[in-house]
Image (cartoon, rainbow, N blue to C red; front, side, top):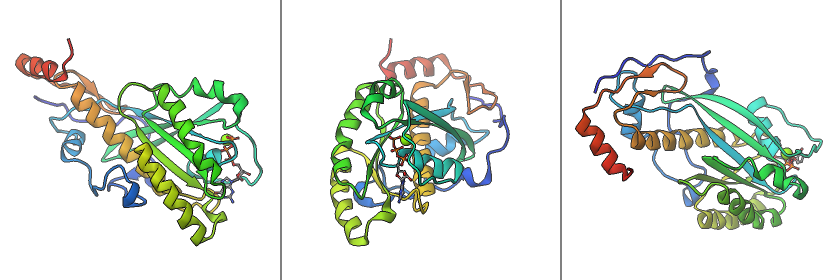
Amino acid sequence: MKATPLLHAGPPVSRDRIISRFPKWYTPEAALQLKDHFLDHVKDACQPRSLGAVGLKMSKVVMVGDLCVGKTSLINRFCKDAFDRDYKATIGVDFEIERFEVAGVPFSLQIWDTAGQEKFKCIASAYYRGAEVIITVFNLADIQTLEHTVQWLEDALRENSLGPRVIFLVGTKKDLVSDAECERTEADAIHMANRMQAEYWSVSAKTGENVKDFFFRVAALAFEKSVLMELQKSSCHTTQIGTGNLIKMEGTSSEASKCQASRGCC
Ligand SMILES: Nc1nc2c(ncn2[C@@H]2O[C@H](COP(=O)(O)OP(=O)(O)OP(=O)(O)O)[C@@H](O)[C@H]2O)c(=O)[nH]1
Ligand SMILES: [Mg+2]
């Protein structure tokens, strides 16, 4: 199979959004995987002249959790490097698009911020559909909000019955709890994360602690999941990488039928 070189379209990604090394987990006790590098065939698929083919642009991320736990603040800290003490409840939903370069390939996260208030739940849940990443959020200083994450995740998964999701459980407002209190609550949260098959992170939007590392981890895991799903789907088709030019994949017909057969589709 021959590939034409990969050309990056669109303005360059800002330097502080370039993910070249695989970002580390927060705790090995609740991590989705413990590798410290991208899978080889994912790296191959991203080489400009590689035989691999990936067609990906962005992953949809949805952030859910009780009102006032700090969802909007977490997104604003990462996307705008801003923090507002005053609480402004999110009405319905809001979203940000954050552009990265992951393993040399342009990749974006479309981050949907949803309202925690009960009265906006029906509006927000309409936006759960199609999310590749679900981030359930609780407040480390309010253990009740941790219990509620189970229901939030169930609601989000109900709208996303197809395919595997990347799931995170995030404890916010780390600056408000003592180390001892944080340790106690994290123990419960890690237990919960394992039940949810989620990766656990503690962050503070106020101080910025772990915020960038967390979103880099989200981007890297979402990217790798996207590439793996694309590699499964496409073998001999024309595909597009990011917003770059088309990559022509001329496979043989037997490869095509092999691919179809392995996919178990019609
Ligand atoms: N000390 C501290 N306060 C925080 C932190 N994150 C958020 N807050 C405060 O918590 C309040 C609620 O934060 P939001 O980000 O609006 O909460 P939310 O989850 O988006 O709330 P809804 O939109 O109603 O669902 C605000 O007053 C924030 O300033 C944090 O990391 N530390
Ligand atoms: Mg909000």
